Image (cartoon, rainbow over all chains, first blue to last red; front, side):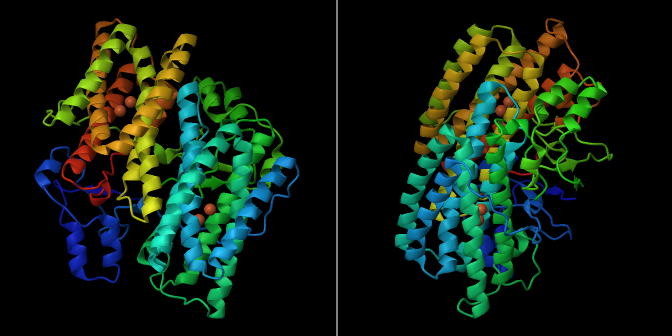
Length: 292
Length: 292
Ligand SMILES: [Fe+2]
Ligand SMILES: [Fe+2]
Ligand SMILES: [Fe+2]
Ligand SMILES: [Fe+2]
């Protein structure tokens, strides 16, 4: 359905044109598309930076950070209440790990759910990338197939990163929050990397429980919007295009689709852990597909 | 165009059914789809392992390691002769690094191009994954967009991994080759990771030159097939489906499309290095898109 349209060479003026057009989203999409464009001749030789992408309706696609074929509609009918009851000591350890992380988070953010969402998404996008990386390297080392799990986990990581790209349009990070993110990423990336090496079963279970907490947080976020404590501002343009929302969508609609995404991640990660519990490897069960 | 079809719950019998059908590709696709399937009830709860995917013509898709929407036709018209003339000392160092790696490779493999291709693809799939990982983490830490480069580099990694999945159907790795791959991956992953941290400009240039060498190797491979020194065996089923080849495609057709892929990677990586040469960051230029 989506056809990239190849135009002569290097469309270096497209972002500028959008900014001139003065759409409400122009500042946001300029941030995504890059603003400085120089030295067309240098770049044109390789012939790869030149593509123009059109939307279904034939108009030009304005984002370079994601493309029409990456967009999707969240499944809002997904069951938000599903829960993995801890059975083994490993389940209990995973749940305890997540619960103990929630305590400092609650104290730090209190009821600033926009800010909280933004900060937590910087962490949420790590596990999928680490899992995808390690399965990719394993597939190469062992000359074996992945059952689609590499793609599934990398897609989860990208989806979480898009959550971050969305929430940072709603609340701007302050300098000490930026500093905190650096530290937390350094610690969490390494911890999850080692954790996944030692026990993918445990790692996926932890993420499953993290997602259960995320669903809870976004439900609280919705309550605060409905209370009037948080302004139900218009949805950022990036969210409208990524989740195919209506043009007049608002923050509440964004939180709804993000929460549905988290419920999907919960299912995928508990499922992955369950596969390991059965004594199987992930590649022995086809990866989930078709959510987006 | 591709619609995943959701069928009741868990299609655990599909792989077995294919094997029974006794198609020529059954062993190959069983390797991809996983053979052991157990305990359907445990898995069905999460509702994510249940999708059945159909092809354009309505028949069932038999691979779980890649999906219809991951397939594409290589651009065989791509210019194979493009070359980045080393200008700076960094270019020269990058080219020298690649040339000096070629020497032991030539001695080790000599004219066993099938084996050589298989082994080199285990290395070729590393840079895209490392680059994608580091850009992903950077995007999260700095609350900034990626310009599509994360996806572009991860796609390159996945494409290289599919090259490996293809060539391992043609020549089986021996035990000492497996041992070699472990060692080489350990060294190369860490070297490229550090290299990319210090200088993405240099790292992408090295990959650009590696791809130029890859094009050369595959051209030699083609010559050996045309000579009759290498058997022009039927193409593996996975290659026919991944590159949308004709049902009677042969090894020669596979090498042609793989070589075109390498030429595309060459363009993307030299382009990425050129962006850095201009003093820009990757996110400031939209990533290539639309090759597949
Ligand atoms: Fe998220
Ligand atoms: Fe999530
Ligand atoms: Fe390759
Ligand atoms: Fe390549």
